[in-house]
Image (cartoon, rainbow, N blue to C red; front, side):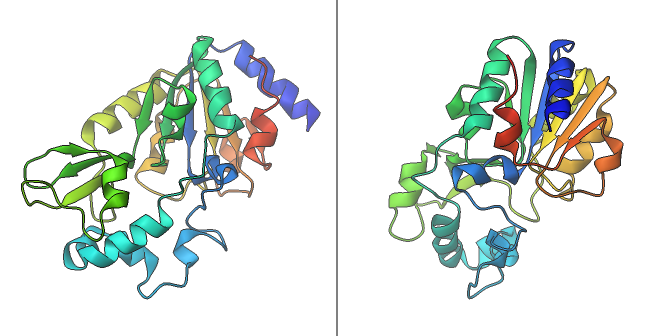
Length: 240
């Protein structure tokens, strides 16, 4: 792998506008399960199909059951940002990385110090009343006995994108513009099968593209450099 690492660092040195696009695999090394692997969230033995639970129609029809699942499988109080999150923040501070685009909702990129982060699927740290719009933190959701309710009586919903919901238009615009302007794109921890987010990479017109994913993807041959390795093993050897 040494030769590939040397090439990756050479690409980084010659680039001045790097964008990172990450999926669930970025946070698995922090102890948060992904969705589609053998031990992922969608494979959990639950009384409802997990993919159904995280849909807007299920939220509307079975709100109590949604929150039971959400608190159990989307909240990991002992999980922390890992080496990849911190290395990306260092790259941004050095003026190399211009934006992080993430499909994750854990908020780890911001916690690690990244400033320009486009959270395509929202964040568990942001919650709002569906009636009056009042904002609430994560603790309010977790500490609610059943369905979290606002002081006005409205249901407090996590600001996360469920199935059947649209991505935020401003976040999409920011992410697409960042990729379009980038001279280097690093894609990591994603099978590139979740749309529309995975389709964003088609806007890249820069010089160097890198894919880092533990398992091969159907799009490996479209990247200039591919690592089928653990993300942390690669990012820990990035030179700032």
